[in-house]
Image 1 (tube, rainbow, N blue to C red):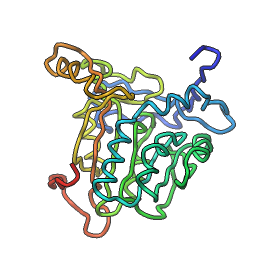
Image 2 (cartoon, rainbow, N blue to C red):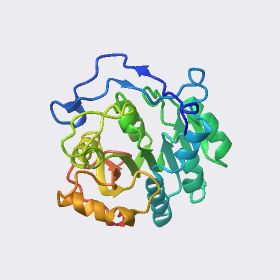
Image 3 (tube, one colour):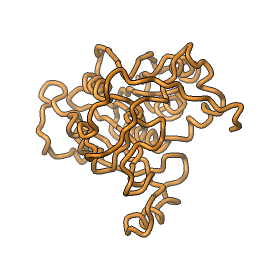
Length: 276
């Protein structure tokens, strides 16, 4: 992509002083971002979704969506909500073929493009920083793929996700693993589009603190490269022979504690092995 076609991300300033990063499961001294530079808004930067960005949208988080599609097929799930669906590239490719009852939500300009790509998914324009959405139904699977690291305050979006869950809902959340992307010594948000990044252990703790009980956790490539091509590097990382790994997308399949009638559980509940 040349300089002439590169889109400058829209900058959205924080409306209030950032919360302490320890409130999000991060260590003391972590230097988080203070603004979100990746939100697109209709009218502010109309060519945010330029052709090069649209082409790239199909490459990233492919393994997360592939896992989601497999869960739908193996479990016979009937409905999916994709929170942060972007231009709908992966929703159309991976979810629509296996689920006739699919919905997605994201910023207005992304949803406008998704409506041209998705065949039957119902799409909703929602500001994920301030969703203000009352749940109109529940879903069997909710996707939240590589969105949480972009949000100044992810709690409203996570609360919204919980509100769409019934007692057996599965939530699949992914985010970059800081240790594998930046190195074990990194304690700051380096990428300007990310407000904060978690290590694998920190992220699991954060999810539990928000009422999401991990059932299964996987490491995947962030892009479309084969998992097997990254295994040698991951072994070197685990042996501390390398400071980074290409298995740098951390995806977590969760249950929602307390969702639906009879769905309340404590943090030590056992995972349903059929979900794995």
